[in-house]
Length: 189
Image (tube, rainbow, N blue to C red; front, side, top):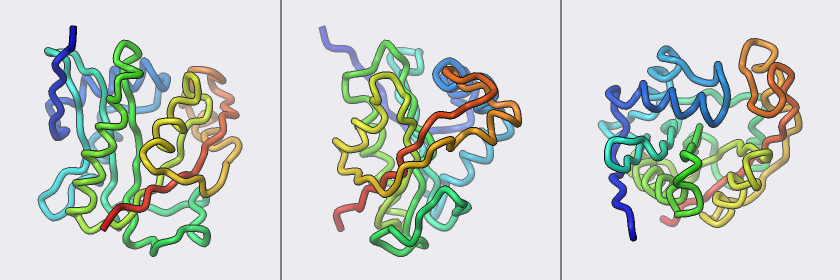
């Protein structure tokens, strides 16, 4: 029996459920009301929202946070010299999270497609992300690759500093040594 999923733009009314799911999947301290508002604001540009949620009935099945181009800080984890496009035209795929009961059904890929469409309308020509290589079955890298993502560079200890500052990784707790794959999708023009 097929289930009906309702994809829609992220709104402040979704924040509590997004934070709850983020805590379940990524660990305590990953997201709170303050950071949620900041992340949401970074996804708005030219009246277009690049963040999305998906519900099954009233249950949040997943969400995608995407920052609009020129509305996010390029940091030491971004290998801009290896990017095939100008940094000013790159959005940032911050977070894609799917409830464990909805994984393997294309939810993450569909959320990414919707964010790509919105990011293109905002003026981006590519998007970059740091994917959690220790995700269950390395699903983050697998779905992103399936969606056209190419590996730019691997980054060991990507979240180590955050874990020392209070983020509790679901695997490493407060001493995270998880690795990130910096990956990029160049959009079809």
